[in-house]
Length: 175
Image (cartoon, rainbow, N blue to C red; front, top):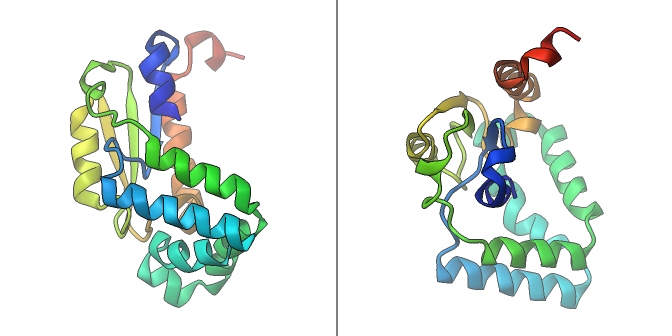
């Protein structure tokens, strides 16, 4: 969403923070998998297939082994999502446009937060994403998979707060 907004309204974007995001669009096979999962959860009126397909992929192996409360929280968040809304989300992700074409043109500061153990957006891909922007900083959550906001919330908050402090308008810092 942030990249789509920046594509249309770059002049309104003071800074861009991307947390475990990617620039690439889905490959056709991946888009078909998302569509099949969307159809399944609508047909079954259940989020069980999403929990089965994604929870383990979204979290770092260490989190899966040592933090059952985080695993349970991610599953609970998924189960609270309505199948119809989740299906629309899956289809939207499958249809998103690649953003690698605009990255070099976005001159605002960009923060890329990556999970060192992210199976969805691997660290090498995150490095490439940061390199695609003229003014990007890569910050790596060392113990996280795809969800550093849940796996390392203090680290993620500190990184976002520091970034916001750097891009805040001068008048806001004195208020």
